[in-house]
Amino acid sequence: MKLQTEIPIKEASNPIDYNSKLVLLGSCFAENIGEKFNYYKFQNAINPFGILFHPKAIENLVVKATSNIKYNDETVFFQNEQWHCYEAHSKLSHSNKSTLLNVLNENIGIANKQIHEASHIIITLGTAWVYRLIENGVIVANCHKVPQKAFNKELLSIETIVQSLKTIINTIKKVNPKAVIVLTVSPVRHIKDGFVENTQSKAHLISAIHEVINIQSLANSNTLEYFPSFEIMMDELRDYRFYKQDMLHPNDTAVNYIWERFKKNWINKEALKIMQDIEGIQRGLSHIPNNPYSESHLKFVKKLKEKQKFLKQKITHITF
Image (cartoon, rainbow, N blue to C red; front, side):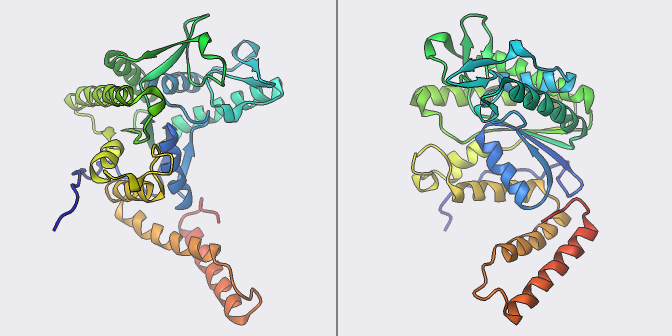
């Protein structure tokens, strides 16, 4: 007896292996999946400017990073005893202006290199709702707790999102034509916008993504793909037991489930075997012995180090 629907996902044309270089951009769900890649020792980079929720913020980062545009005094501001940048997440904010500018400019340089070298760029869109500064009309990536009266809130139209995605894709392709771009929509619910408004937002994102993918498919391109994170959460895991206590974010079980669906369709068979070896080592490293000086544990540690050394010879970038 089948007790859930399962969304059919076609096998990737350009699967990920241990030679792949991955860049993950977007919402907090990008960070969830990025942590999985970290655990399994893939070459990956996650959100150099912190979590970015909407397509215009990701577009701004990609355009600036590929052009290596630097930040200056005019691009930061002081609020609540810290310096912030409207284009970056608050985790980059700092009490010292020079430190913040140094971090921003260092990270834009890192992002430039990552985008140029990436084999796969995974972009997770979280919301179509944005905040526009009234004083200059600029859409911000993060409000940094500036009073809401300083912004106008608006919903990006499908047409605007389509244009933003086209800019992101074309900008990446100019500097890295071979990069595979994977688009997905975050399953995190943005209820602060409202229940109906959250649904409308996700609908705009999904409609825009598929319009862009349809355009690319007509051009016989196999370097732009969609992964149904949102649909898996809504249709395969349609139960509140798969949410954290806030009832908004997928819990570990849900993240693991979606990761397994991604892994099955996006990671090649040889890499899957290596992942099993790495998982065995990771579990061994996390093991807490009753007696760290016992003969059995010392043998266990020696065997674990031999496994690490053998794996390191096969894949030189791996470190434990």
